[in-house]
Image 1 (cartoon, rainbow, N blue to C red):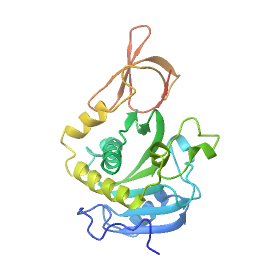
Image 2 (cartoon, rainbow, N blue to C red; image 1 turned 120 degrees about the vertical axis):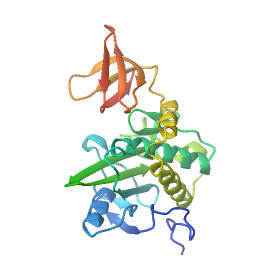
Image 3 (cartoon, rainbow, N blue to C red; image 1 turned 90 degrees about the vertical axis):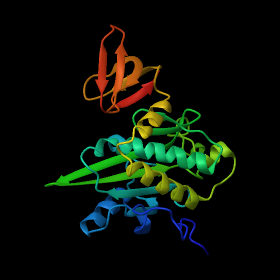
Image 4 (cartoon, helix red, strand yellow; image 1 turned 135 degrees about the vertical axis):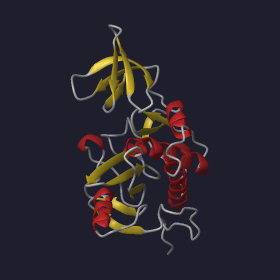
Amino acid sequence: MADPLALPPVLRTHLMGKRVVFREEATSTMELAWDEAKRGAPEGALALAESQTAGRGRRGRSWVSPPGSNLTFSLLLRPTPKALPRLTRLAAVAVARAIEGCTSLRPAFKWPNDVLLGGKKVCGILVESRVEGEDVWAVVGVGLNVNFDPRAYPEIAGIATSLAAELGRPLLRAPLLAAFLEQFEALYLATDSPQAFQEWRARLSTLGRQVMVNGDGPALMGTAEDVDSEGALLLRCADGTLKRFLAGEVSLR
């Protein structure tokens, strides 16, 4: 039986996915990628798992992903310090382009890193980094809901969706993975280009809406007015002040 996650023989990348570490089950693909870094794996090494026993989302949350239904993977990178804060945006744009290239769906983003379809989360992105002397390492983790039915999980049924749920049919996962790797590499190698930022901003469904932002301090409500060149959210509060958030959790009001 053919491996449902096998990448095509001709993957149009120079870095991403040239080394693949696959596990039927792993604690998390993030940990798997970091383990590969310790073993001297090259940049672009791909850690891929059918199921995770401790898959991680942002802010310590777990990631629900039934075995054999979704794409859960991580990429090992050695970005420049300048590129490091842009990785989340690059990954989000690459996911959106991959979805659009393989389906008729048109994703949007919720700041800072959720990919949405019909207002529901279809993909989450997590970036971890480590600095050792002059070396910068990063792992970009992606969890893309492809073929599972969120309605079977009451805790996420109202906020999550999948590509199959939106299309009404299952999809092959390998073409989606290959499309992501190709799109991400192109964006990563052109980090200084403004195109990725412009595309990310244009897809932000958060902008112009009333939101509540949980950052490092007390939660604040206001209008998500814009994002600046570093990707920080600019929140216009009711008293007219403008608050800047480099990270945080946004709830649409």
